[in-house]
Length: 73
Image (tube, rainbow, N blue to C red; front, side, top):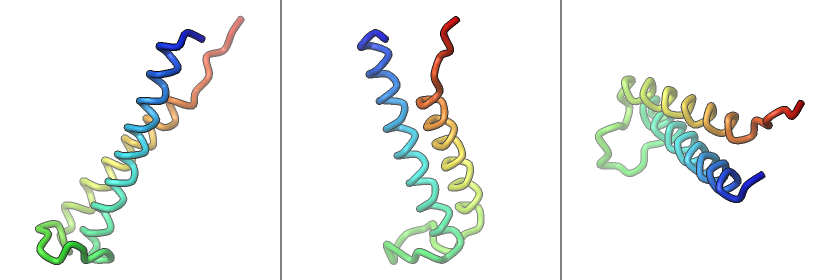
């Protein structure tokens, strides 16, 4: 596999992990489970739970795509 494709897969995986973790953080803030930082506008706001879960789902898809192997004939 060319080095360019390997680097792209790594970049996509890192982006996916970042999106997944930040999405979970937003969702937990929206649910009121994580109350940090105290001055955050996201705390205990249900719409941030939705935004966070959608962001985490996009991150999970990127992680899955970065791990998918191309089948050779």
